[in-house]
Length: 347
Ligand SMILES: Cc1cc2nc3c(=O)[nH]c(=O)nc-3n(C[C@H](O)[C@H](O)[C@H](O)COP(=O)(O)OP(=O)(O)OC[C@H]3O[C@@H](n4cnc5c(N)ncnc54)[C@H](O)[C@@H]3O)c2cc1C
Image (cartoon, rainbow, N blue to C red; front, side, top):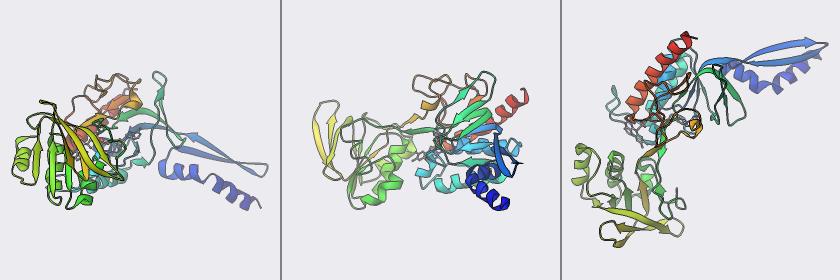
């Protein structure tokens, strides 16, 4: 009888017990008192919690795990980070060409093998008492307690803010040509922007669409020379200079855009089935807005990964002035792990 009852209790506590075994976040104490099994869960204070599973977070996790710190990574809404949106990374040393998904899966596997734990959840706040541990509530209602925290929440795509942009999001408006481009085979599309990402998107789309209009606010591209040549040498790409999108319209999906020339104010209409927006990124820093010092654009001000709050570190695209590339994010992740080790050692 007692055995059956214990099994029943065991199943009612399965979630936390699984956490204990796989995430090592609780110590379970079971006591039998007068035939009743009582379960006590005592939360363990982790040495290091990493917020974000992009190249910065995963590299920090690999280094911290190898240093015996048993890091816990909260993966967020986008496990693997921004790179999972590209099918071709050609500048990560050691790989002439690798898909973003493969690169990030490799990092996540390597981190777990080294002893890191990945939690597929989202951090919704950071609470701490000076000198005390950090408390990180998760969207699932769970909580993490840690002695140190690494913010590696990266960046996200910027909107252009024109009429119809949100309305037609995922109905013709996209921020990822490699993800959505193949749906526009044989059709006309527009790419908005003039940097490296915009150029790469336009060149990629030109491979299978009928025509690519590349619309840029200025009279020259910001992309590097090598990338620019790819655009100028491609007959399928038509550059529309000094122009901005006023309106995206259609019935069920995008059919047309209206653009305004910024020099003479003239308005033109283009028939396109897809609009790919590539006007840069903004930091994902809402979580730390009132916690650490941010620059005027919302990026974290950090010196050698140290933020304005002792015990909170930052790495990757979220850091003010960073290169915003996978390799620089990974490099900062490695430095952060070392800095955290030193911080924990001095406590
Ligand atoms: C389409 C595209 C193509 C690119 N191609 C290249 C390339 O070829 N080469 C190159 O070097 N770079 C490339 N980049 C840039 C590169 O992806 C970034 O520089 C790099 O991913 C930054 O890494 P990160 O770890 O700082 O942040 P990110 O990769 O942005 O990861 C941020 C992580 O934080 C998590 N997160 C956010 N908020 C929370 C929260 N509240 N709780 C928990 N987790 C949270 C997210 O889920 C995500 O896992 C590309 C970017 C894009 C968008």
